[in-house]
Image (cartoon, rainbow, N blue to C red):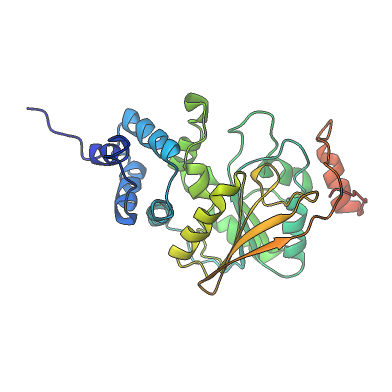
Length: 287
């Protein structure tokens, strides 16, 4: 007599059809993600689970449960940091000007920790690659993060360095043909428990989910908005709606546009233009 796999219950909850399926509770999501991270799930189950979540769209309770499970496995050391900056989308229309904003904050005395993933989507440039050109080499472990923050007030750590399994799930994009919920939950990780969390989404409908998940996770301060290509960089030609958490209170603000007219896609994303703007204070209207 065959015995049902322990993870099958979670696939069943999500996949029983229009009337029988439901979202996972926060506790169920925590346990399910814990099983995945411990390697207790078959590949076919993982694929089914991620795509069922993708079709349903993950709830803020599910996101919170996933995030706490990942945090349990990260075992990050205690490192003081002011701002957690998630960078998982990459840029394709414009240069990643947000990197200069992060470095300017570091220059002002704020300790900024950035984490992200690279290479999962073709024809995009990622923080990890550009930081090298600027002279901000990504860290490879938590000790280097601590050292860089002490020296420069800024550190970037690739996701693969602190959660290889999450990186593996992100890399499944080529097999699925779709992004998985991992892209969403990674933005909420805040592994060093920074009091301020900066998150950007590509689809505006996801903003409220991020906001509510941040509140459920006890995040003191968070800002979520639709950014250029999904990175934490506002589109200057559009108004920007920001969902916020501030001292456990949820609110919304709207920032006016900064430029008139649609900004055309740059013909060539030349990283040297970004480097020149940073090192030589070269004026760029869009940047």
